[in-house]
Length: 505
Ligand SMILES: Nc1nc2c(ncn2[C@@H]2O[C@H](COP(=O)(O)OP(=O)(O)OP(=O)(O)O)[C@@H](O)[C@H]2O)c(=O)[nH]1
Ligand SMILES: [Mg+2]
Image (tube, rainbow, N blue to C red):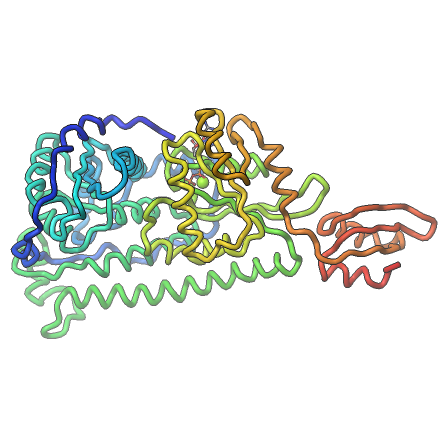
């Protein structure tokens, strides 16, 4: 994990520690009506990029990418979008610390900083305020808005990112007062997902989540249209489809709803294809192992180690958004699959859990979850519980779980020991050095479901195909070549046992 944040959390902490709770008398703010006209980001069809490409090519491409202002909720004019794109790069982070220790608050902001960097921003400052709860009108206390404005001006920041999900009114009030763009954690994560999604399905899922997020945050247009080219539009002379008395916001909402409906249909179709593939696997009763865990824990690295898969590994959050499934075999030749999944994060926006539900369902249907945790992270336990929260949300709590404590090479041995005590069913590995990988594989193999039916059969030599299947999908306890054929005993799944029945002895 990159620790190269050049902002000084500690200094800021000192500077902000004396901020105290303020009374939340905000009626005047809530009624603030500085609405502006809303333009949607382009709703054009995404260029359907069929299959995800992995490996070096993709890495190179990604590094060449600049961020796009896919979340612009108010500007459509291309020059304005370009402007915004540039401006999202110098940011001030703002958090409200309501519970837990100072360390927790710092970790949360450090993570927000990583997220912001992942999105392509440069973090200038990170500050947080101690409060009982966020201010309903301005998130931080109202008195602190001025202080933040000073920091924004002093640092030359163009964007403020708040560490939480802000109500539409809070966003608007803050923007109006700070005079710079304000983004919340949810929008930031959605934006990162949008930058990283590769497959058609991944892109559609993210777009759906973005539209749902935006739908709640459309700004009705009031008098203040001077910044927009759309003064004409406001006067009702704009691009067609606007009936008398219909406001822009209604048209936008309608466009969003149409688009959402279409995305839902498309996604259903795509899910159908994936279900068919999964059913094929199920019919052959191929055990499925899923690698899940907090973002940047080393899931893709582990999949590479365990299966030589060649999946994109990057020191960035959410490098993987499209699940990669690999077929692999146990030491004794049994076939099973191992899949990578999208990383989890604390307060994963609900829209995203919803959007990725079909992808995450794979976790719920797995035979075994390898829950990877970064042993070198300052708060691995926090990551474990954040991931388990998502497991609960997607109904995956029943799936057997093996904790894989990764990055042993750079973790504190004391922390590794503590984690092993807290999580008895765990294995310590380093996907980087290969340490512990053999033990992890052995554990995985021992945890794979065993075929249900015991059998003993005498297979004639011309049924080499059946013997082959047994090697791949069954478990062979004994095998003896005799004059009449091969005598095998072991276990097989119901299908295969059915085929063997004719030769049972
Ligand atoms: N030192 C060390 N670094 C590791 C280890 N495993 C992974 N990393 C690094 O951690 C970073 C993240 O690894 P990934 O495998 O992409 O992590 P991930 O969990 O798939 O991340 P997302 O897909 O972004 O959620 C990369 O820079 C890896 O090189 C390890 O065992 N030791
Ligand atoms: Mg990954």
